[in-house]
Length: 56
Image 1 (cartoon, rainbow, N blue to C red):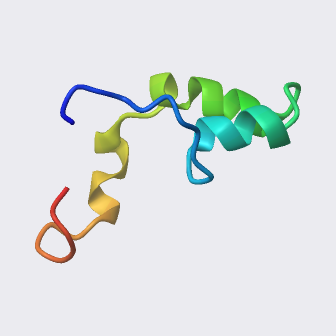
Image 2 (image 1 turned 30 degrees about the horizontal axis):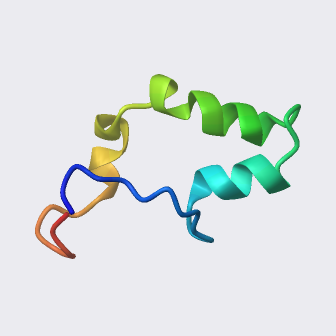
Image 3 (image 1 turned 135 degrees about the vertical axis):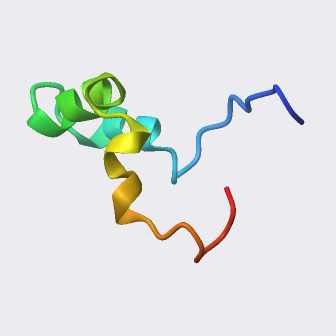
């Protein structure tokens, strides 16, 4: 349903994996936690083809 988020955890959920596997004092844990504030989608736009692939 639109606007609803399942509370069930998924193996493919990065938050779930990061919490249980990556140590809290790891660089990768910090990158996961702060990544969205450090990088914008536009920073990676030139790496993707505009006319090839699935629509999001």
